[in-house]
Length: 90
Image (cartoon, rainbow, N blue to C red; front, side, top):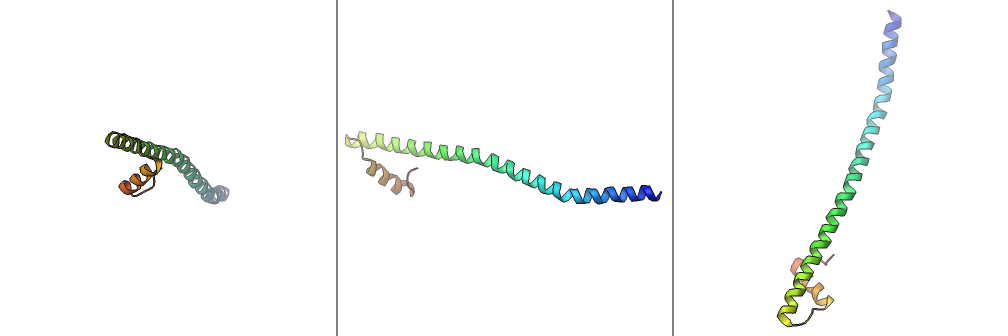
């Protein structure tokens, strides 16, 4: 009976010692997965912003050339974008 009790106690102590390391490993793995998932999401978001910025600039260029009969300069487009949206074009 004492041997069974001693074996059970040894098993519980062993599990207790391994458990925090396992929990730490799990949280590290979870953070690695979240970082891995974050990077493609960030890339997609940046590409979408760039596409939206290009679309806006092309739209303004078309409007400007129809109204004034010539293409706006890069500085004119940049100035318009900063006035209209409050940020520099991407």
